[in-house]
Amino acid sequence: MNTKKEIKFIEEIKAIVPKKLGKIYTSSVIEKDSKRLTINLKKVDALPKCGLIGAPDVCVKITLTQGAKTQTKSSRIIKSTCSAVYNEAVMFLCGTSKNDLAQTSIVISVHDAQRTCTGDDTIGCAFLGVGAVDKSEIDQWKGTTEHLGKEYKGNHTLKAPQTTPPVHVAEANDDVAADEEDY
Image (cartoon, rainbow, N blue to C red; front, side):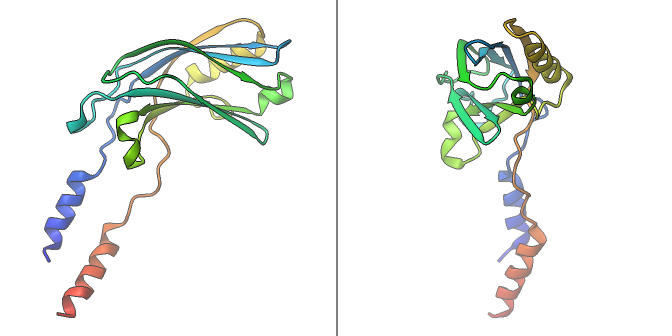
């Protein structure tokens, strides 16, 4: 077997993460009396095209975790676009005390519905609450939790999803070399 050709082929088909994954535009409001968090999905734009497949079929999933309770809701799928306009409201029933809100984690993930069979359909993510990283995410969540009943807007740059560690190619070559010695 030609191991150099195999390595080259593997490197060619490896998923390449583009530098810019796009932006998502949202707003959020907490209604204390009804114990409801509303996240308004405005739009997603500047999404990368994915090789031969072309423009993604875009779907947004929002996962809210508060204590041991996790809820996930999704938007509709908008086909073949790098710029999807939603104008959808996604509502969650949740605790609205300061302690509950301090332990709230929200993951807003953008998915390509064309790639669901490969298991790597997540284009990028934005975070509110506990997992917030960027200044825009922190500011939106801070405004939302400090001023209950008032809507706070934010636009966030998508970050690469958490992935499993890459396979170490050198270990695979050792197995191939051992197989070649048997012949």
